Image (tube, rainbow, N blue to C red; front, side, top):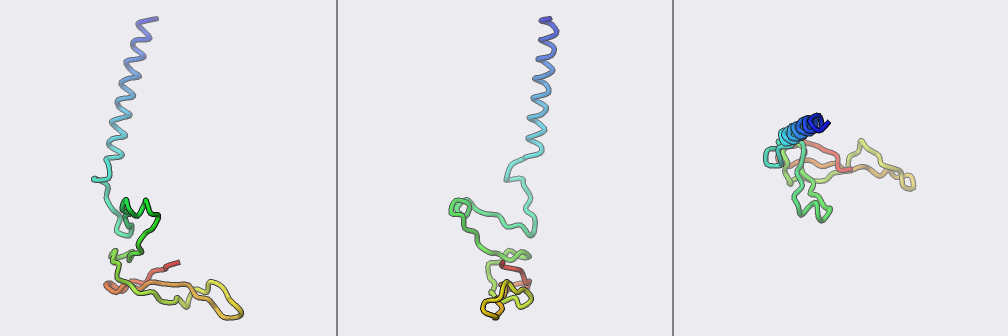
Length: 99
């Protein structure tokens, strides 16, 4: 039985090493991760403070203006419509929702 146990332990160790190698290949680390074009990356300060800057989803610019989005009525207050907000990028002209 000791010989069988030793063989099983060797195979188990080999499987565990293989699993670790596969995990390293699947999760290469942040320096190798590719950023998607519409995905903004938070810095450590933003994660700690819980705040995030609004950026253009197309060009990641911080230069945009806020406008009322007349196509989205959020609710009616005493009969007057309250509209949603949209951002318009001043660099590329992309319109995006701020709600």
